[in-house]
Image (cartoon, rainbow, N blue to C red; front, side, top):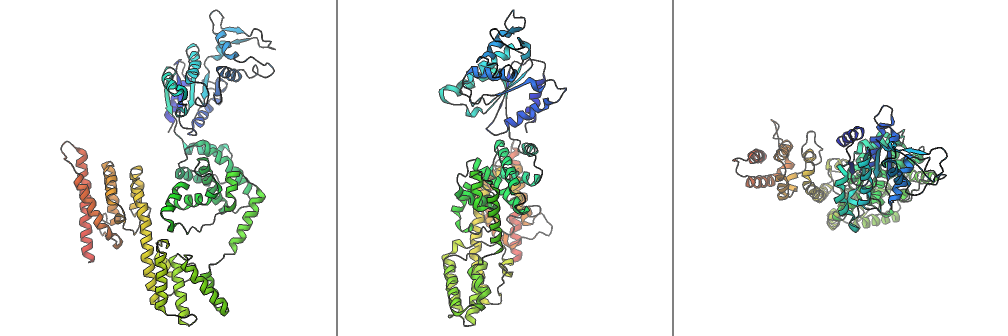
Length: 613
């Protein structure tokens, strides 16, 4: 990504010609400017290069408030012995030395008059020739751009030296005219400027090697790449800090935490560290939502909270084990890696996990034969109340409740009739309608749920199953509709990823068996489609052809997709209305082919629907 910049810098540094201009490397904080320059100058650590590492002078202007402070920094870098505390040189001596050393008639040398040096009396001005000066953090100083560039431009003209400035020019202060001064003066000093782009994977490999990760290198790298992608963390400084801290954490939990849980903890830590460093989360109360949002929905805390508020009913069923959940806030926000504390919490969690606390419904189903009359009555009342209060929202739980209650009615353990029972349960389910958990795989649910089975031979069970399935599907489609329409708004970001969700062969299977086009806002879909290059439009049409089976000689339209016909016809009409004159217009000519694909799909749907009617 930055190879062209590296190649240019190498040519600039090693050239015998004096360009008399500086290079500017710019970019956002944490984008990898320091990583880039470190990688660049590391090539000069070996013998045989045109310049040596001691010919490279690197200084940061961070916190610098006067020109004399730059003098001192440069002198300290060039002559660390002469600038030692014992010699106590006067402030600003470097600038005066340079000027003295290159004055006419000096013979190319100067002496430090008035300063008692133990062994060195003279400094050759040619010592400053052919050096590379790297000046970092130009935006983090109190000096104005005129002062910074004015200072160094004098040496650029008088000495055969190379100069690279580094900084985030977007952060140069707007106050006191600094920004406008910067834009005016930089053209007099800067000959070329480059924007550094984050080279994430390259930097990640370097950081992992630098920090000497001996184990779990590949998993840690993959977890980092996933988190960087999902959380859009382009700040390499944060990535390096995260890796440093997770190495400390892994060292702490080594031999304490089981291998599988160790990887889960690593994933959670990297996710939370990134979100904290990016100011997405700011307190311990946000920890769980940040974990669930990232793990279950591949989004950051804010995105998850927004989605959670829109669709409350679908977020109540996250049952994954989160190791060290109770102390992750302490780990992330307090840096508390206490080995003893982690060990005690993990042991307690492990102990609790071995004693799975069953819900009252399943206790009733498993132990009712051993209950006394009062215990049985109390448990029935408890489970009834829990059902009414929304404790049992999964269709499998409701069907088990229906099943066991019918059995109790039949055996006269409780009063009433089947009809009364079914009506009561339907009434409760209707009241909780929006909270019923969407279930996709009803074939598996019909076999068992939570290790329990229920009888399909009882007609009321099948009646209740169909009743709940309709509500569950309604909620499921409501959820999918929101997701699909959000994805449609982002088609242009990655057309191929969109197509993979549509096709079946070599696709993601994300919407397999779902009437995709009937769930999408077809007008919005058309508006996004028409803005794409025609090649991408054609690719999307080809994806739908594969989805519906027209690309195969024995293509059969799945019954679940027949609902798509109406919106498919509407899409074809909208697209035809957008067609223009093809004369002298190749773009419109190519659109004709997309239109033909839509028409063939509509004809295919008509034929397939006739066959099954």
